[in-house]
Image 1 (cartoon, protein in one colour):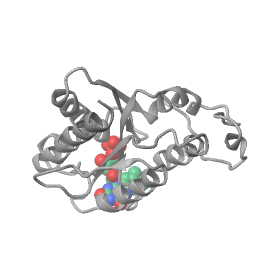
Image 2 (cartoon, protein in one colour; image 1 turned 180 degrees about the horizontal axis):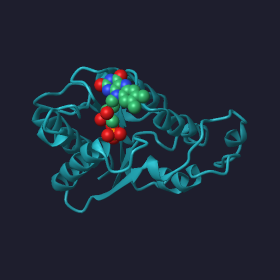
Image 3 (spheres, rainbow, N blue to C red; image 1 turned 90 degrees about the horizontal axis):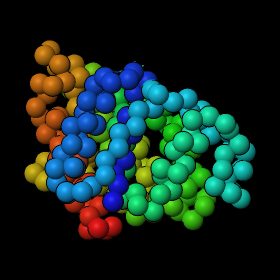
Length: 198
Ligand SMILES: Cc1cc2nc3c(=O)[nH]c(=O)nc-3n(C[C@H](O)[C@H](O)[C@H](O)COP(=O)(O)O)c2cc1C
């Protein structure tokens, strides 16, 4: 059983990566033997969907960029959960995140391959209330269209996912409330993934 985390910051190894690492570590500690993988979009060049229609016929894309690496990972039947982590950019996700989600249309068109995969979302903003929930909601919308099982970060907070504040004067490592939501989300994704796919 695999859980994939995708960090959608253009900056490698920064605050979104950190929040996602915390989340995936909690998932790993929740379910023994779970296979965790963290992917950073900063390592890849993924363009937006050009609506050519090729993927209506085959699980292939006309664009020859790094999304080709994602096709076997996301169409793997062993995939149980997907955690998307984005910095908040103007109250929404990054353009890297949007391009990635739009390119996932190929999985919908080829038998809803992401159906029943558990989806959780992390948003990291420079401000405490800088649009984290708005960013999360727009990613939830894309997950719902894929027939994924969208989860909150679970109890005790149980709202919309993990919301973190990188602008804390002592750094994101000191955003204890936000980090708690990241840990809870990892736990929740792992729990539901096990119920659905274990
Ligand atoms: C173009 C741009 C737009 C941003 N818009 C917001 C915003 O609307 N709300 C917010 O809280 N932070 C905003 N930020 C700050 C980032 O969300 C914040 O610095 C985040 O921690 C960056 O993640 P990273 O360290 O993984 O790159 C913005 C940053 C950039 C570059």
